[in-house]
Amino acid sequence: MPVRFLSLLLVVALCCLPARLAAQSAADCLVAVGEALDSADTALFQRKVDVDALVSQAIDVFVGCASDPQMAQAMPPMLTLILSQAAKNDATGKAIKSMLFTECRAFLLQGVASGAFAGRPTGRNAGQGMLAPLFANASMGRKEIAAIGEPESQDNGWVVPFTLRDYGNGQNYALEGLVQDDHGELRVTKIMNLPEIFLQVLEEAQRYVE
Image (cartoon, rainbow, N blue to C red; front, top):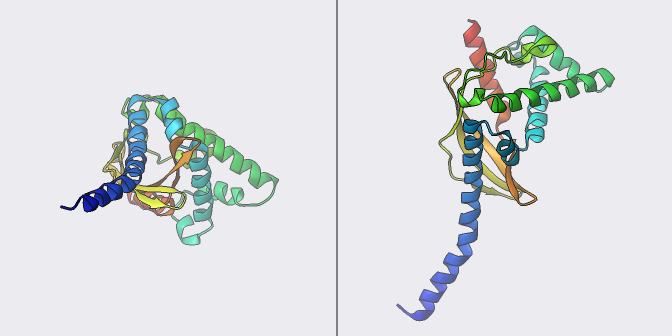
């Protein structure tokens, strides 16, 4: 084989190497999230997950779904009322949305820190008070990151498909996580298909009631 052809192959391989390494690093980010869940390591979890961004996204999805009459019918009436109030662009709506953010963030981090999402019984309720309906059907069982797929390069990061296995309700959720570089740290900043996942959860809740 000519020397020049070998050199060309080497150059092509070296050019492709950074992309392959970046894809692997994006997948490793999800591996780290799973390790954080299993070890109840909130510091690692927050390094690898942009909690504030995900909670904000989730609230926007909740509020948007509550404005859909068909989807609203699948929600507990009190939850629909809370979310419809949060959708209003006034002082009350903003206050409720802020409270939703605080409660959802606390629920997520408490689930990690308590070891509930690692499968350790904690005896804690999912939610209390006014926002209890929001967490009424929330599983407090173990969460496992499984079946991490091939990352797909995007202009602003990598979309990594993975499965969230919930041992609390026996369900699997096929998620698409957007992994982005945040000052040198790869983090999950968004769930690309969150509206579809929320619809799946609502359908599961309806079957449970029936």
